[in-house]
Length: 151
Image: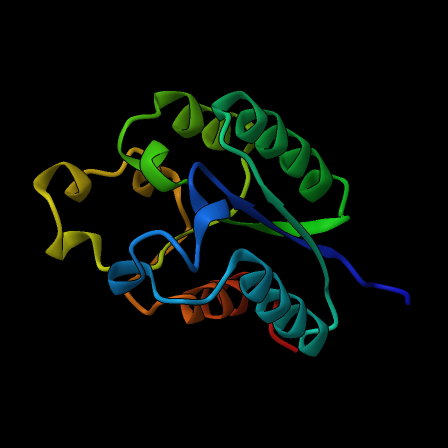
């Protein structure tokens, strides 16, 4: 399909536990459910999905750099990033997004501003194109819409 490009979705630590970890905070949808939701949203926009999860910060840095190169080559539009706890601790992810010049929409399943104070600070927000917070896993679909070019 001519003109089809990719949306990356990168998930950080512990997101592989969705559906079982603190369902009162994160809901009961699994990471596989989130991937299916993202795949559906991308298909509706005529985009392809590259969906990944890692508990390792270095993997996320590598993927951000890879995605930045794909955007520059015209093969991708950007990335939805749920960095989990790395949101609040990782200067490395901030620097990777900035250095790769990757359009990013930061997403959080819960409303981090209604939680513990350490979750109120994000190292990603200053380099993100947008932020979706507190809409559950539906936030991923909103973030994808924010990245996809309008027709």
